[in-house]
Picture 1 (cartoon, rainbow, N blue to C red):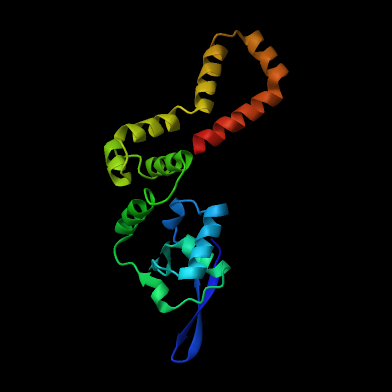
Picture 2: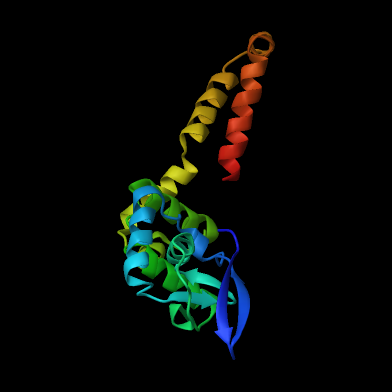
Length: 195
């Protein structure tokens, strides 16, 4: 989310503040399309009903409300914002709990959040991540399995087994014939492994 200025009257003087999304808020995708248009229309009619939560000088919750309000010309007041208090760990837990079920995330988006949690906390078990996200531990286990057994990794394992069965002359002939394909394939494997 880009930085957007807001004006607030303090002692009759206008002050400008820039708010950007907190990295924890970026765990979830922004809304787009019709959902954003509906939010803009609602804010234009009713204003901001749920305050935008700030943490460490950034938007912890309410990026979509902030963006929609700016786009529809909403005049912000101090009542539109509320400071969130707590530790960084508590802030992360709050963002997850507030957004994972409240938002209309697609299954793909939910899977991405789960996989991001697994990558961020590889030592946490499936049950702990499931508890934090409010999903079944089997859902987390499936996501963990997809991370470690992605289609690219499976393709590479199959290729490696076939390669091991070739003699030196067959290996040289194969590399000569498929050199450009091998470069692309190895690149895909490297990208899949890094994510």
